[in-house]
Length: 423
Image 1 (tube, rainbow, N blue to C red):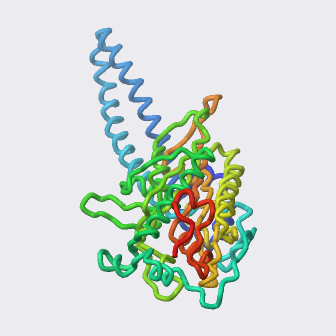
Image 2: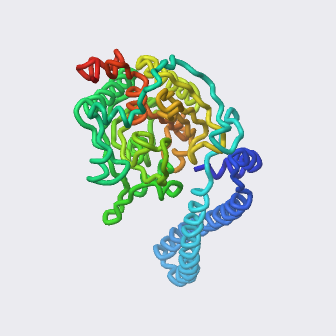
Image 3: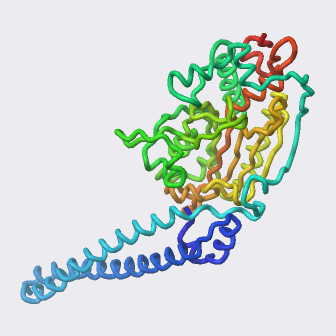
């Protein structure tokens, strides 16, 4: 959520930045600022009345003490009038703040200057490419065929048990999945991220805190009986650990990693681009998040990108990095880098990670601040990234590592799988 003070002081800059996102919010922001003016005037008037009431209470007490009951009685009438008036102001203030919050929740984060303009993923900018795309034989198979051939993943069984988008991993497929989870967690903890296990369901406040609600409400599974939501990513519970917290400057940075299943109600579609592991309703992911002082967040984002790149290089995965255009940014993000691997068997790039900085946008929603050495309070900058999402990494390994003898496991994973070939 954008800070009201920042909106008041930088209205035109905010409108220009949001226009980059193709967000036409002038009317909304004008309405918000008008309502904020009402809130500020109401607060000032309420403060004055409460101060007067407090002063009167002291004066009335002294008059009674000095035996001037008649004089005190006259002041009590004024005190009663103030009490009634201040109650009305408090109710108006409360209603105004509710309306303000509802409006603020509709305004996305402002993109950083480095974010390119654009409306769709076609306008994203490739910043880097690495790894070697393997030269596979003409009869190379896509991962869903390989999974069937080697009894690694049963998509039909998952549909029987639950429905489309809920695969069942078996045998060496399950072992490879577990190996990737452990490998990612080990790489992250070695880089200084503290492993944390979190709930897989969150309450509504957590959804609002990190921005999934109300923006992505239709994409989340809602347990209506308990009013809880299945998490779409570990970012939600990991970041909400710090909701309503005032941290000490000495606690920063905070770096966490966690493995969770993720649940997403994505719109159904057909074709090879969503076949197999390309798009699932339930999938495993290892996440990293960071809480940083504002002056450190830019360097922290670079460190996260470097960390994920190093993992992909070690896994011998051909990759590219994209800087997302403003129109393709998530609602809460100020800047996002996407990692994609090249699937040789599908002849296409598949997204496997998003690394984002939200600056103070999430912290404003979370009421998350830190106290500096001089006693001043500031918004914490939050960042997160997939390190990594498993389905497409697994798909990429199966497809790019297939040989006439079988699927060769990347050397870095062999200590985790216990085998170097799936045949």
